[in-house]
Image (tube, rainbow, N blue to C red; front, top):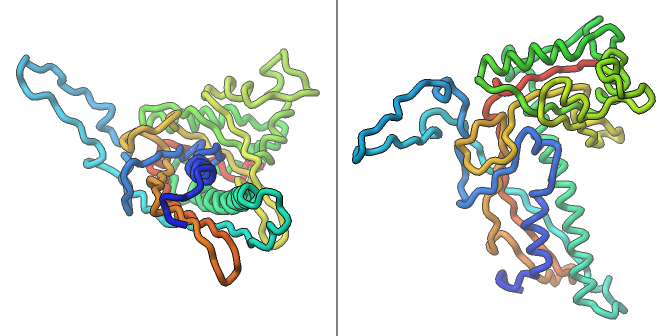
Length: 307
């Protein structure tokens, strides 16, 4: 089957699937590039965006042109990932509608392949997000009575210090907080937090929305995704909490942000649908080009091993 005959139902799926919400996107929003490149540039936060400029212009004079990424930027290197699904035609023997059944099975298997690929990519993204060595002074590892699981500890005061640290470094207050589920299950019933909300009972515990109001951020996300390694399931985010400034959407790579995920355009050259005679299978193969980077660690703060 030629590229321009790629099934529409599968094309819609592969175009839309990587856009689905993921926990890593909360700190590395998805940017859909318009042009395919091997690398992109994302703006680094520097003091220029806080400088006072002279924008007065006499009529008829040329306006000042801004091109921030040329000044100070971080490279996003793109990698190619291939996902495939195959349906042996022998599986369709006896099917009342072989074409329809083949498409449905290929879509289901393609979804499974994408699930595995995106889970693997998110694991790599989380590794970079949780690398404390890259945050400089924007990290803390509570111990003893400061552990968030300790009855007398005050996570709110610790978060307030982190908020001010980000503000002094970037001029921006953080607007998102990612909390691993293992941490959240201890926080939601913590008495000195519940006491801040008289209408909240110990039975129900505080909600992410409650906590967002308490710590003055727009959104608190409870990351409960898991991975399997050597037969054991573990929370991807460990016992960690990340506070960061991240815009709601990224329309240009000159946007000030903690991090970004870039997806190169997906055209017919990257979508293949063919018949494999050796396995008597109809095969779909998709070549995705994705890259990500934490562009501004100073726009974030990592609380490591808070329990």
